Image (cartoon, rainbow, N blue to C red; front, side):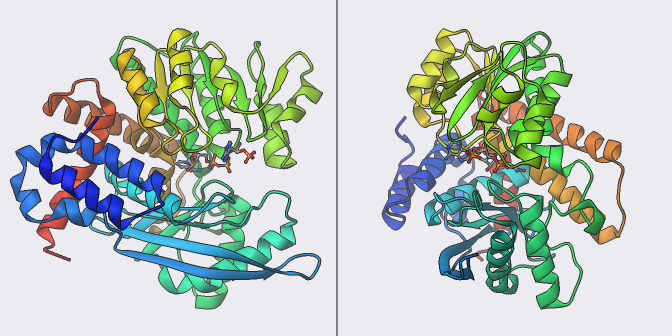
Length: 448
Ligand code: NDP
């Protein structure tokens, strides 16, 4: 879809010129600007205030060397990133991704998406993201610790509990957050809530581990109900087998669905009787193994090499929870042909623009990442509140707040879509609702 609004079309050209070689960032900006066309028409004051030009340019981008010594005594060098994208409504907030595919364009797309996601949560959090091309897979605990300590030795000077509060993402779980927090505390000589996703013994929040996966299902449940459907008795395919996928599987099953597939970057498992989550948790959370090992415990399941074909499994609901652009146009067509009624994104930007077009052509319900997976950052926001209060809330209290936040996010997407004449287009609704709050704040604060 080409932009019809000349002002936004020119802006997109500028963004493309200014950010060469960063296709994921361009993809994310294009989608948002397309959704914002009716806003640009209706709100000349925001155009006048330069909000659109300013929101696509990060406030600050930090890149740094991360040297560390491996178990063989060899010096290794990775590249570290923190993109502080927008602080109009609160301190920068967003995860740290540790994966060999990380480069500036990935961090910028994630940081840009984070602005709107954090706004949708209704909590006071700006948008940021960071990470490194370090691959924790196959590294010893000692190597991961030395990397995390070196990474934080630079990052600490740029973050703080009222300035920028990183969290986990792909490759950054409780172990990595723990090592980074320890190093920050040592360097600053202060105990503050500078990272979220911390262990429960040092300021972490109950239900943070479950938050993104649970939140995804709460959001999806709202979207299904609003359209006369539910999880009850439905077949669900979930990609990935990390933090988001595991807790999405748990909640979808609790809500009455049968999850039949999970994957990792090597391949996928299909268990027609429903995934046994205790087996997956043991492989992934305890042993850091591969999803293929599921067959050792459940020999009746199938394992297929390569993860893309997971979308050929017939399902009613698809929850991509692995990584960006994992559903392309072809996979989306197969989902539609097999009768899939809804796709909700646990991962960030897992659907290509071609896939999204297929969802709409086939009247499938579509829950976009920045709304559907906002539960993780929402509970991170609640962790920040608990840290500031020096209190810990119960699991039920946090889970209850998470559920209400996800409900209100769905309601905001739904009503913004209706208000701007695109009923049922929750992607446009999420982009518009997320944008407007940040835009009003940017306008009120002047040209900064
Ligand atoms: P984890 O590291 O816990 O798990 C990631 C899963 O996705 C693993 O199964 C991994 O397989 C798979 N995966 C990662 N990269 C690729 C790839 N390039 N191709 C195929 N599979 C891949 O990460 P999370 O579960 O935390 O994150 C998953 C997604 O959810 C990401 O897009 C993340 O940005 C998003 N997200 C996470 C939040 C959170 O709170 N954790 C919050 C909001 C969004 P393998 O082990 O083989 O690499």
